[in-house]
Image (tube, helix red, strand yellow):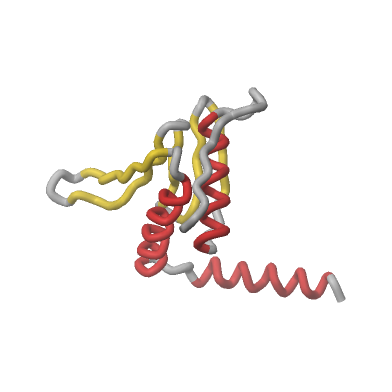
Length: 125
């Protein structure tokens, strides 16, 4: 069973949203190998995971776009309590895997990554 962690601001500087988003980001990487970035401001935090997958957090809930309702012509969102970042990370990782299957990295991004790796290796010789 995975260790559960709860975000509780103790230092008075970080908001609940920032702490929760950081725990989600850490759980995504540690438990699922999914890299992500966090951004915060105005008492909200975002966890940027993949193109089309941004998790919002207000310190109480995580929520993200989970699909599209063709009949209603609008996005469908999933949400999860911010007190359970490990379980939320599992759900987000499933969505990430689904998006990766549908929309793989473009050739341009692949080429840029390869070029960056080459220049990094050449600079260390």
